[in-house]
Amino acid sequence: MTISPAGDSAVWVEFGNEISLSLNSRVHGLAGSLREKPLRGVVDMVPAYASLLVCYDPMVISGKKLSAALASRAKKNPGTGQGRGRVVDIPVCYGGDFAPDMDAVCAHTGFPREEVIARHTSPLYRIYMLGFLPGFPYLGGLDPALETPRLETPRTKIPAGSVGIGGAQTGIYPLESPGGWRIIGRTPLKPYDPDRAEPFLYRAGDSIRFYPVNRDEYDNIAGGA
Image (cartoon, rainbow, N blue to C red; front, side):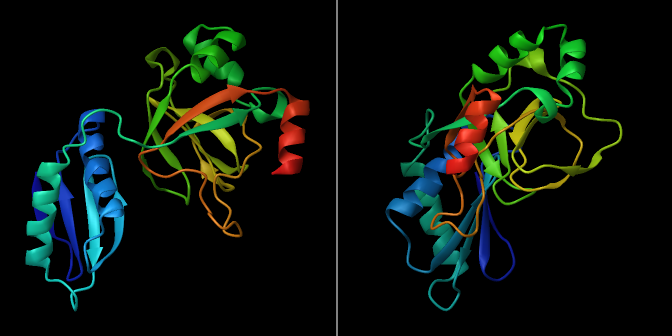
Protein backbone atom coordinates (compact mmCIF):
# COMPACT_ATOMS: atom_id res chain seq x y z
CA MET A 1 0.00 0.00 0.00
CA THR A 2 1.21 3.51 -0.81
CA ILE A 3 -0.26 6.87 0.20
CA SER A 4 0.61 9.98 -1.80
CA PRO A 5 -0.67 13.56 -2.11
CA ALA A 6 -3.27 14.32 -4.78
CA GLY A 7 -3.20 18.11 -4.91
CA ASP A 8 -3.45 20.18 -1.73
CA SER A 9 -6.68 18.70 -0.35
CA ALA A 10 -6.66 14.97 -1.13
CA VAL A 11 -4.52 11.89 -0.69
CA TRP A 12 -4.46 8.80 -2.86
CA VAL A 13 -4.32 5.43 -1.16
CA GLU A 14 -3.18 2.76 -3.62
CA PHE A 15 -3.35 -0.94 -2.78
CA GLY A 16 -2.08 -2.28 -6.13
CA ASN A 17 -2.40 -1.86 -9.87
CA GLU A 18 -4.64 -4.70 -11.01
CA ILE A 19 -8.34 -5.55 -11.05
CA SER A 20 -9.00 -8.14 -8.38
CA LEU A 21 -11.59 -8.84 -5.71
CA SER A 22 -8.96 -8.98 -2.96
CA LEU A 23 -7.58 -5.51 -3.74
CA ASN A 24 -11.03 -4.02 -4.20
CA SER A 25 -12.09 -5.50 -0.86
CA ARG A 26 -9.20 -3.67 0.80
CA VAL A 27 -10.36 -0.43 -0.84
CA HIS A 28 -13.87 -0.86 0.51
CA GLY A 29 -12.63 -2.08 3.87
CA LEU A 30 -10.91 1.29 4.36
CA ALA A 31 -13.82 3.25 2.90
CA GLY A 32 -16.26 1.39 5.17
CA SER A 33 -14.12 2.17 8.19
CA LEU A 34 -14.16 5.87 7.33
CA ARG A 35 -17.94 5.84 6.92
CA GLU A 36 -18.52 4.04 10.22
CA LYS A 37 -15.95 6.03 12.19
CA PRO A 38 -15.31 9.29 10.30
CA LEU A 39 -12.01 11.08 10.61
CA ARG A 40 -12.36 14.76 11.39
CA GLY A 41 -11.56 16.78 8.28
CA VAL A 42 -12.39 14.10 5.70
CA VAL A 43 -15.04 15.48 3.34
CA ASP A 44 -15.34 12.87 0.58
CA MET A 45 -14.09 9.51 -0.71
CA VAL A 46 -13.86 8.13 -4.24
CA PRO A 47 -13.21 4.36 -4.44
CA ALA A 48 -11.77 2.82 -7.59
CA TYR A 49 -10.62 -0.67 -8.59
CA ALA A 50 -7.52 -0.73 -6.39
CA SER A 51 -7.30 2.73 -4.85
CA LEU A 52 -9.20 5.20 -2.70
CA LEU A 53 -9.07 8.97 -3.12
CA VAL A 54 -9.68 10.68 0.22
CA CYS A 55 -10.56 14.38 0.08
CA TYR A 56 -10.03 16.52 3.18
CA ASP A 57 -10.17 20.05 4.54
CA PRO A 58 -6.55 21.20 5.04
CA MET A 59 -7.77 23.77 7.58
CA VAL A 60 -8.90 20.89 9.79
CA ILE A 61 -6.27 18.20 9.26
CA SER A 62 -2.93 18.11 7.51
CA GLY A 63 -2.13 15.70 4.71
CA LYS A 64 0.65 14.19 6.81
CA LYS A 65 -1.63 13.45 9.77
CA LEU A 66 -4.35 12.13 7.52
CA SER A 67 -1.93 9.82 5.74
CA ALA A 68 -0.73 8.39 9.06
CA ALA A 69 -4.32 7.85 10.22
CA LEU A 70 -5.26 6.16 6.95
CA ALA A 71 -2.25 3.84 7.12
CA SER A 72 -3.31 2.80 10.63
CA ARG A 73 -6.93 2.27 9.56
CA ALA A 74 -5.89 0.20 6.54
CA LYS A 75 -3.86 -2.16 8.72
CA LYS A 76 -6.81 -2.65 11.07
CA ASN A 77 -9.32 -3.12 8.23
CA PRO A 78 -7.75 -5.52 5.69
CA GLY A 79 -11.07 -5.85 3.84
CA THR A 80 -10.92 -9.61 3.46
CA GLY A 81 -13.85 -11.37 1.80
CA GLN A 82 -16.79 -9.78 0.05
CA GLY A 83 -17.34 -7.02 2.60
CA ARG A 84 -20.69 -5.89 3.92
CA GLY A 85 -22.19 -4.22 0.87
CA ARG A 86 -25.83 -4.66 -0.06
CA VAL A 87 -27.18 -6.96 -2.76
CA VAL A 88 -29.35 -5.00 -5.20
CA ASP A 89 -31.71 -6.93 -7.48
CA ILE A 90 -32.08 -5.41 -10.96
CA PRO A 91 -34.90 -6.56 -13.30
CA VAL A 92 -33.97 -6.75 -16.99
CA CYS A 93 -36.12 -7.31 -20.06
CA TYR A 94 -33.91 -9.19 -22.51
CA GLY A 95 -36.24 -9.08 -25.52
CA GLY A 96 -37.37 -7.08 -28.53
CA ASP A 97 -36.11 -3.57 -29.09
CA PHE A 98 -34.48 -3.63 -25.67
CA ALA A 99 -31.87 -6.13 -26.91
CA PRO A 100 -30.57 -4.93 -30.31
CA ASP A 101 -27.29 -6.85 -29.94
CA MET A 102 -28.61 -10.10 -28.48
CA ASP A 103 -28.37 -11.92 -31.82
CA ALA A 104 -24.75 -10.78 -32.22
CA VAL A 105 -23.88 -11.99 -28.72
CA CYS A 106 -25.55 -15.33 -29.44
CA ALA A 107 -23.62 -15.68 -32.69
CA HIS A 108 -20.29 -14.81 -31.04
CA THR A 109 -20.74 -17.07 -28.01
CA GLY A 110 -22.55 -19.89 -29.78
CA PHE A 111 -25.30 -19.88 -27.15
CA PRO A 112 -29.03 -19.58 -27.79
CA ARG A 113 -30.81 -16.54 -26.33
CA GLU A 114 -32.07 -18.49 -23.31
CA GLU A 115 -28.54 -19.62 -22.42
CA VAL A 116 -27.16 -16.09 -22.71
CA ILE A 117 -29.88 -14.85 -20.38
CA ALA A 118 -29.31 -17.69 -17.93
CA ARG A 119 -25.56 -17.11 -17.82
CA HIS A 120 -25.96 -13.33 -17.53
CA THR A 121 -28.37 -13.60 -14.59
CA SER A 122 -26.48 -16.31 -12.69
CA PRO A 123 -23.53 -14.38 -11.17
CA LEU A 124 -23.59 -12.03 -8.23
CA TYR A 125 -21.73 -9.03 -9.66
CA ARG A 126 -19.47 -6.99 -7.41
CA ILE A 127 -19.57 -3.22 -8.03
CA TYR A 128 -15.88 -2.36 -8.06
CA MET A 129 -16.50 1.33 -8.67
CA LEU A 130 -18.82 3.88 -10.27
CA GLY A 131 -17.72 6.08 -13.16
CA PHE A 132 -18.12 7.27 -16.75
CA LEU A 133 -21.70 8.41 -15.95
CA PRO A 134 -23.42 8.97 -12.57
CA GLY A 135 -24.43 5.51 -11.42
CA PHE A 136 -22.57 3.54 -14.12
CA PRO A 137 -21.36 0.40 -12.29
CA TYR A 138 -18.08 -1.28 -13.17
CA LEU A 139 -18.94 -4.89 -12.38
CA GLY A 140 -16.83 -7.94 -11.73
CA GLY A 141 -18.09 -11.47 -12.26
CA LEU A 142 -19.21 -11.79 -15.89
CA ASP A 143 -19.14 -15.39 -17.11
CA PRO A 144 -16.06 -15.55 -19.38
CA ALA A 145 -18.11 -17.50 -21.93
CA LEU A 146 -20.18 -14.34 -22.50
CA GLU A 147 -17.23 -12.08 -23.31
CA THR A 148 -18.04 -10.30 -26.57
CA PRO A 149 -16.09 -7.56 -28.38
CA ARG A 150 -17.44 -4.02 -28.30
CA LEU A 151 -19.05 -2.54 -31.39
CA GLU A 152 -16.54 -1.44 -34.03
CA THR A 153 -18.46 1.85 -34.32
CA PRO A 154 -20.07 3.04 -31.06
CA ARG A 155 -23.68 4.19 -31.10
CA THR A 156 -24.29 7.89 -30.64
CA LYS A 157 -27.32 7.24 -28.43
CA ILE A 158 -28.03 4.40 -26.01
CA PRO A 159 -31.28 4.60 -23.98
CA ALA A 160 -31.09 4.98 -20.22
CA GLY A 161 -31.36 1.66 -18.42
CA SER A 162 -29.70 -0.33 -21.21
CA VAL A 163 -27.73 -3.38 -20.04
CA GLY A 164 -24.74 -4.36 -22.13
CA ILE A 165 -21.62 -6.46 -22.50
CA GLY A 166 -18.32 -4.88 -23.46
CA GLY A 167 -15.44 -7.32 -23.68
CA ALA A 168 -15.07 -8.94 -20.26
CA GLN A 169 -17.41 -6.48 -18.56
CA THR A 170 -21.13 -5.96 -18.18
CA GLY A 171 -22.97 -2.93 -16.87
CA ILE A 172 -25.93 -0.57 -16.95
CA TYR A 173 -26.16 2.75 -18.78
CA PRO A 174 -27.94 4.89 -16.15
CA LEU A 175 -28.47 7.81 -18.53
CA GLU A 176 -28.90 8.18 -22.27
CA SER A 177 -25.43 8.45 -23.76
CA PRO A 178 -23.14 7.29 -26.55
CA GLY A 179 -21.56 3.88 -26.08
CA GLY A 180 -19.99 0.89 -27.73
CA TRP A 181 -21.14 -2.03 -25.60
CA ARG A 182 -23.38 -4.80 -26.94
CA ILE A 183 -26.88 -4.08 -25.62
CA ILE A 184 -28.73 -7.23 -24.54
CA GLY A 185 -31.54 -5.81 -22.40
CA ARG A 186 -32.95 -2.90 -20.44
CA THR A 187 -33.98 -2.33 -16.85
CA PRO A 188 -37.10 -0.33 -15.96
CA LEU A 189 -35.35 0.99 -12.85
CA LYS A 190 -33.47 4.28 -12.73
CA PRO A 191 -30.00 3.63 -11.33
CA TYR A 192 -29.55 7.39 -11.00
CA ASP A 193 -32.29 9.93 -10.34
CA PRO A 194 -31.20 13.32 -8.98
CA ASP A 195 -34.76 14.01 -7.81
CA ARG A 196 -34.78 11.05 -5.39
CA ALA A 197 -33.85 11.48 -1.75
CA GLU A 198 -31.10 8.92 -2.46
CA PRO A 199 -30.10 9.53 -6.09
CA PHE A 200 -28.24 6.22 -6.53
CA LEU A 201 -29.71 2.72 -6.28
CA TYR A 202 -26.34 1.32 -5.27
CA ARG A 203 -22.81 2.34 -4.46
CA ALA A 204 -19.34 0.94 -4.98
CA GLY A 205 -18.84 -2.11 -2.79
CA ASP A 206 -22.42 -3.33 -3.22
CA SER A 207 -23.36 -6.25 -5.47
CA ILE A 208 -25.90 -6.54 -8.27
CA ARG A 209 -28.02 -9.52 -9.20
CA PHE A 210 -29.87 -9.33 -12.53
CA TYR A 211 -33.15 -11.20 -13.03
CA PRO A 212 -35.23 -11.51 -16.21
CA VAL A 213 -38.68 -9.99 -16.68
CA ASN A 214 -41.04 -9.98 -19.66
CA ARG A 215 -42.36 -6.83 -21.34
CA ASP A 216 -45.55 -6.68 -19.26
CA GLU A 217 -43.54 -6.96 -16.05
CA TYR A 218 -41.14 -4.33 -17.34
CA ASP A 219 -44.00 -1.91 -18.02
CA ASN A 220 -45.54 -2.54 -14.59
CA ILE A 221 -42.25 -1.88 -12.81
CA ALA A 222 -41.55 1.19 -14.94
CA GLY A 223 -45.02 2.56 -14.14
CA GLY A 224 -44.38 2.32 -10.45
CA ALA A 225 -40.74 3.40 -10.47
